[in-house]
Amino acid sequence: QVQLVESRGGLVQPGESLRLSCRASGMISSVFWQTTMGWYRQAPGQQRELVASIDNSGNTNYADSVKGRFTVSRDASKKTVYLQMNSMKPEDTAVYYCNSKTRNGPERWGQGTQVTVSS
Image (cartoon, rainbow, N blue to C red; front, side, top):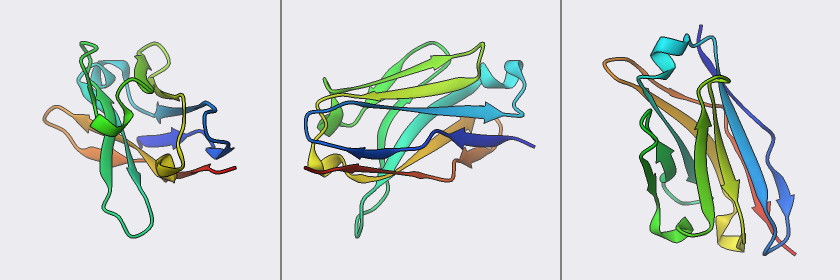
């Protein structure tokens, strides 16, 4: 059974950095190669929104609000996707969810992890 296992978020101050990771536990390598991995977030009272995604070719997509500050990457050998968040702002506060979309396969979600940016 495939599960997306996210690292713990946390509390950071404005301007600081945080890295999230998400491992596709139980996913075989050939499937991971056909899977676009991404990060979404949901702030209180807001809809869930795409933060960043990366496909198996390394093509990335970012929300305008995080361009130049966040970087998404993936390590196929570890079946893991990362989100490096720099120059964080209070408006980055949200629950962050890992997402996987497999070509001709299911979409999956992680359990979510809280990230809070506050002084």
